[in-house]
Length: 397
Image 1 (tube, rainbow, N blue to C red):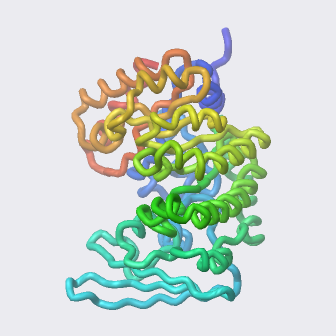
Image 2 (cartoon, rainbow, N blue to C red):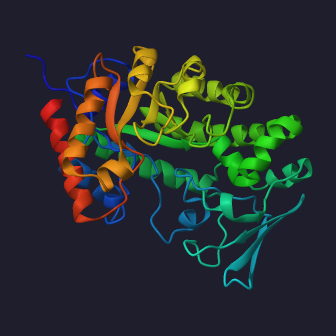
């Protein structure tokens, strides 16, 4: 009788499009638990108590009110540091409607970059404007990067990881690896970023128009991001990870045509996948909607697992067709909607969603079960549904 696989072995078998001892269940994000745990290790133990295949994320998101949380909450991993000669100034003006106009300047040796944000009732940062964040996109009155002349100054904000940060990262990574070995868990690193960061800096409409009207400028922005991203990625890979993850919520056909995707985003994706594979790591790509028209391009880059397969929010998705096209070539991670099904649905809806995901995506291997993207609600109903999802998975696996 073969010994039972460890959680790490199950996850790696799934990522290799093989059939593990049983289908692993690893939540992409579980904020409802993370937000009430003391640190990453407490968070991981909480997942293990639930029976999940927890994955140890190197240098996971820092807790509030750390500097990293305020500056780049939506880009976890290594801290983002500016050149030592950069000076930052922030100011605010009260608008007639009662909202506030926040202005932030980055004064660099190559010139000053500035952005203006009109706050909303749900603005989470008080009078502060973060550098990289989803909240910036719909609220910016003035984008940080708009012209080719801005790029020389941007280089002072996109610096390689600082030595002090790397020393702390390596010390913590050693502890995280020890924890992973003790409990037989896989280790991941990231997040890498490409198109998402271009939208944070330049805005969605503005950047997509630039790909058509000013393609050289758009390509230059993405090239700067890619170079900066690879410097950070190299440090993650050097620390030893089983899986490197790039966030690509804004790289789907919700925004990009396949032709624009192939021209502007695919080249850097191919380079990053190659870098991960040379280091012995798998490559994960988070895209929760609009992935179907890009599947062949994504697989051509060598991506090992598409993270975020959602049967509800991806209106153009088809899990059965996605499984047919990716079988044996790329693993799939997800299968159940997090918000409408797990947070707001009835228990029988949750169980049915798990059954459908397992029926469609599990045969032949290459599947990790998860809510997509997240479970944020810390409510009795949401936790009953989390328990129901895990129970149904255990029954079927």
